[in-house]
Length: 343
Image: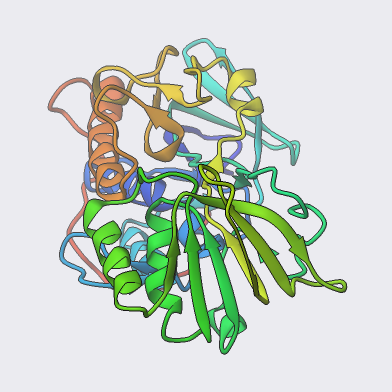
């Protein structure tokens, strides 16, 4: 029976860390999960956007790169032999006689009793600053991600932002770049206080330039970034200096068009409202990871892993009843090829 003919116990939309762990926990609970991934590879944001970014907040792993984390998660989930369909972007969801029909842009339709939405930030749409020259120099020295550290070797680099990514990239690039300057528009930060204190210490030691509250006033260059002017948004004082790269770390906003079309209830930020045990407003639809928000939510990878486990348990209860679990019990770790098993 093909993947499109079978009625699955659970289909997970997305292939990032939350999705992979949800699939793993579904498998250990005796269910055969299916993953629908819009890209042609698994790993989500760590693999697509931050393959060389250091990750410090995974329990038991002191430090790894985004790609290393993705590789380990993929290796782990492949033990339970999930079904994986790549290049499948879900366009519409229909509830027919208690079964969800997931209609993809590929014209394929997949059927499932339950769905776990783990789409993360969707299409990875970066939040723009609206700074002068931002669009003009995009791809010409200005970027929103770091895919290869080697691109910044020996350069004067400007980072913009006050979140964890800005702090992490500042610490990572300071020994590779010629000079790193970090600016942030206010003296409050979204980053973890430990990371902020570390960057402040680097600034005080003269290892980086750390300017707050500063914003970009002008970007200059003959076809590519060569110089930037920044200004203090309280005193209007300006500073100009040479740069060859500008990295804007303002975060990514969710692409909510599909979520709205699916009928999911969203908050004012465009994030899925979840309730008890990852439930959404739709029956049999659960949501986890960066696409969701609830009281007390922190967008940390460790919380995604917890939500993954909770959603797998909720799916099992929804399909089989409380405490019963699936029919295909997992026999423990076994070495498997990293390639997805497809039926």
